[in-house]
Length: 588
Image (cartoon, rainbow, N blue to C red; front, side):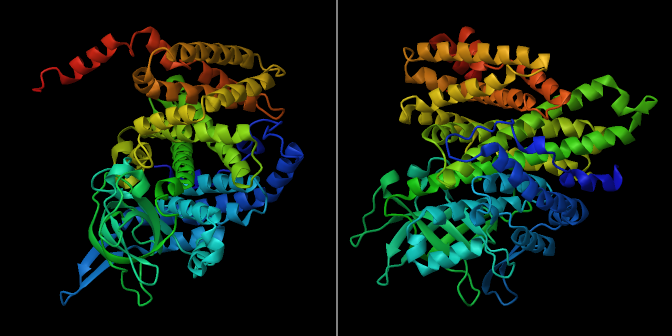
């Protein structure tokens, strides 16, 4: 097909304007010369990003393909009938673990060499890595989530077992580096953790626990440790139902002798995609565990972990979008149809341009959220920035996931029939992308999380969101690009329309907001990405292409929730029409 140039997809050199959103880089009142600090940091991290990009193209891309060609296997018994539950993974998968350790993919934000910008450094580097990692990005996401928990837990310093785990999870030494699982999902529910958790924890005389339960969907089962949820059983056999009965536990997957720690692998999941990752159903039959959270505070303990894993989900989406676009762009120069290269067909270029607009929007959204997270985790975020992070995190995850699926599907079309042929490696990209809208919360679940953030803060997250939009649009007023004036006008108009709708929504009742939740989340996402693109195109080093991208993004319906409200989608009649259409002809 496109020969060795495909290997360059992960190694594209980053420009400065691929990394920052504007030349002011408003990160709040943190007492730092932000612009100079960022420029200095960028100069310091650029050699790392460039050398790693070269390594992705020269080495890691092929290792990732090997992970796809050699999938994990489960060997439950040895030749003598003894239960061994071996997970057989490829040498390429093991090599990815070593690469991740050496490159500090998890370690960078915890080494904290560049303060709040350390998280941006990590995310930029991981975007180069993710789409060529053979899905090793999945265990790294959960490892990063576990690191976030340990860093915020007072037990880490006082408990030598936790301190050792923390040290290993951020190690750059492959012989010491650990990965972590997150075994939360059980048979009765995925996102409904409060009612779905059936695993029980039995206290032991030494203060530890024995876990008994069935984990239905356990990714990265070959990890060294895991964090998992269970209900503590009291001396008379009682335990608390609901959220208040759930605690989080630390489990080392294997005992010192190498045998599994009270864990039986029932089966590996036969998944649509992400087959490189060993995902299993696990029986916990007396697994030794240590209470990691406060008793009954397990759900609260996983909240900061969700912020991390949702960011990883989104950076993987942006990485995959960029990769398929790079491949399609390269192919367009090589493939000839109807007497000329397909890059010379305007309709094809238009398709690539639309993919480019979405990809740039996704990348900026990811990097800006990483910036906010970097401020939050280094205690430099203002109250407004913390509130903004709360609302944009679920928006980022839900919207970039949908964008990635659509963009990669379009990318396969760019190769014609070859996009459907397995040995090109292209179909696997689409299969793997589908998990992005499911893992760590489906689109509807995350839409409700956005609403929850508004309710729990008495509307403060929305107010901060609109304030952020206003500040970003101010930058465009000084730009010389005429395209930005119309884009800003459309953003401002859509933002005002949404504010008016939300005022009216207070009189519509909770059912209205739930029904409109998905469209509201899409509207907020489009507005925020539009503001980031306009802000970025207002930067002194922005190109004409940056302005065109902002213009094209803002030409779409930026506020579908207003459009659909005006069309009666959320009315009682609309709800009845929905159900009638869905159930028409189906016996009830």
